[in-house]
Image 1: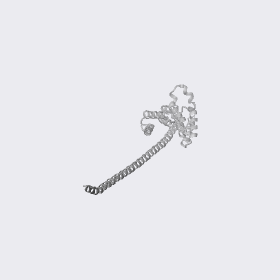
Image 2: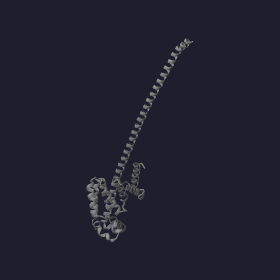
Image 3: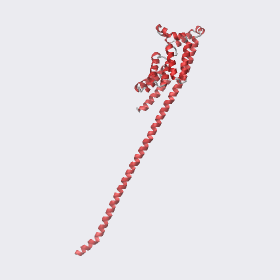
Image 4: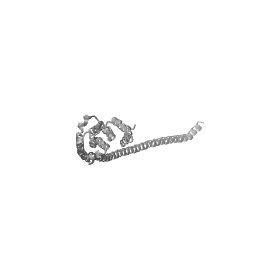
Length: 273
């Protein structure tokens, strides 16, 4: 009996050992598979990080491109505005020259009283004010041709890009002819000469002087716009936004209003609000 049991155990032991080896092999295989899965998972994370980095770089490129486009648009608007200013200045100079010519022609004034009155009003905006201002207009009334010549010299300088000379000539014109028909224009171009040389505080004061002394001038919308531009350059953002909003609401349909709205839109895009 004992021999039979021993014989059975001898036969069964190799099978048990084989089962144990197979089980161990399976376990090793499972461990290898798990390690491989982990490696694949790590590789997947690396790939995802690389993809995210590529997307971030792409977005940065798009942001830089948009910033470049905004700067290009800003430069284009400045160039267009400067060109518009120059053309308006030439037209204004021509009108003032015609007024001066008519003022020096007594026969034309005698034949047309209404025209004579308009010439006086053009040469002296303060004519409708109290007589106390009459003394300050003597230079204007004395020699309109000299006033026109002085203005032309200053305007020629700013057209040529000689901003230092232009500012000196416009200041001289304003001192000699403070109430001339071209005085608002002189204040405006004085401000432009300082703005072009990045002297924004003095430019701001010049534009504000125009608005204070000649609020009904044709140059008032442009001057108010440049007040806003100067405030932006001086980092007075809140005040600049208020000024540009005022330009759009006070002078609807004007070129100045259009430029003010464009600048407000760009500010909104830049702030992300």
